[in-house]
Structures are given as C-alpha cells and as structure tokens.
Image (cartoon, rainbow over all chains, first blue to last red):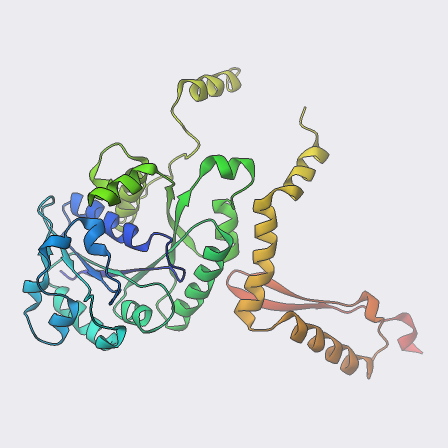
Length: 267
Length: 86
C-alpha cells in the first residue's frame, strides 16, 4: 500500500487553499482513510489554526528535514478522527530551508504509513510552490469565480503542465449562486471553458466556513453545512466514486420547492 | 415573454460576461507571452512577406489567436485578391 500525494495550490492567495486542504483531510479521514497533511507555507503557517491544532505543535517540517526530530514526532494527531495527522510548517524560517527533493524524500518516507498525503502549497510561483509540487501525484488547483483568481489559476495550470505534473484538477471555491444567477459572477461552465481543465469540485460560499475557522473545527466535521457536503463529495471523487454535482440553486426553501413544482406541473 | 433580443442584451450587459471576455484575451497573452503590440507587429510583418508573392487586401485579412483546449493556435484567414492571377 502506497499513499497518494495530493498537492493543493492556486497561484493567488486567499482563495481557500488551506481551508480546502483541512476539509479534504477531514473528509478523507471520515472515510476511514489514513491521512497526513503537510503545511508547505513556511514562514506563514496556517493549516494548524484552521484544523484547531495550533496548541499542540512541538516540532515542525523543518525540524524533520534538518534531523532535529523523527518524522513521527512532528506528526500531530487530530483526536477527533481515527487517523488524521498534521505536519506543521516552521514559522520562523524562510522557504529556502526546504528543497523540492527534501519534500520528495519526506513524502516517500510517509507513503507506507498512510493512504493520503495532502500538501498545502503557499500562494505564488516560487520556491514554496515548487516544494509543494515536487512530490505530487495529483494536483488540485483552487480558484474562485473572480477575474484575478482565474487568471492566476491559468498561470499555475501552465506551470504544473510544464513540470509534467498535470493534468491538474479544478476546485471552484466560494461560488455564490445568486450572484451567478444574476449574471454578476463567472459561471462554473465559463471558468472550465477558459481554463480547459477537469473539474473535481464546486464549493458554495457558506458562512459556516468562517464560523468553522474561528473555532478551529473544519466545516466538514459538521453534518449539515453545504460546504462540508461539497468537500465530502470531492473526497469521494478522489476515492474513485462518481458523485453527481450538487445543485447549488436548491435553497430547499418552501418557496423554491413550490415554484419548481408549479413549473414542472404538466410533466 | 422573455424576448430573445432582451435576453441577448442582458447577456451583453452583465458583468460576468464582461469578465469572461476580458479573461479570454488576457489568458491568450499570458499563455503565449505575446503582448497586443507584438501581435500587431507580427501581423504587419506577415502581411509584408505574403504581399511579396500574392496580392492581398490588408483590410480583409484576419490573423487571430484561438484557444483549443490548453493549446493556443494562430489562425489566419487571408483572402487573395482576384488581380493576382494576371
């Protein structure tokens, strides 16, 4: 058994890479998978706070690479799930403390221990991005339906192809269905047409995500939240299942259901 | 009833469509690393070369970058003027 390395990247900052990494890790762990996530953003670590594990850090990625601790010692176990671990980024070092070959070696060492290794890439196209990309078997590009995020995603997709790590798959995050319906947000179809890559998930904009980050409890831990459902669907797709895309328009409200019933009345 | 024209107008006006059209052009230039100015120069030089061999009307020439999946393609449509056979 050998783990798959999934790198989550985006080009532009603030589109939801870290949130996506945390939630996919939770969703995979919920499916009885053994998961390690690695924060690749050295100097600006954040995966620890999104997962709510910031108080339990003793050693970090750079400590492992520089031999100050064993790999197992830097793996923080998330007690809410059967097998989910975090290897945090170093906060006081710079990106040059780690090289792409360090990342490949580290992931190779982890491959026999777990089923999935998720690498949270930093924004940008420099060293940190290259570190995160080097060990990847699968690359997921996160973007928002906004002009600058889509443009940067396109740059990243090109770089992934140039490194022969493609084809990348797309996660379209923070989709606002009412803005899309009004014609004031680029639709998923249009983003896919522009970027010309395959989709693996659409995450609706969901206030629960903000609340979840505040509390350090990834939204996927809650049964009801729509964003959590969307992340669970991506995890199932990673596991090879065919999962239909959820209808984001569906408010589930009485009015919506009624109007749909009336519209489809005849047939 | 929602008229066809009306829908077409709205489609033209909405900001999502404006973003899509702008992105189309930006991505072409990003991917090929050719600025709009360089593209213009290339067109003019191409026309000069072609004019040495056949008669063409620059106004009818179309040279554009087209997207084909993740590949960019330079597509040229260059009508040859009738007088070139004489």
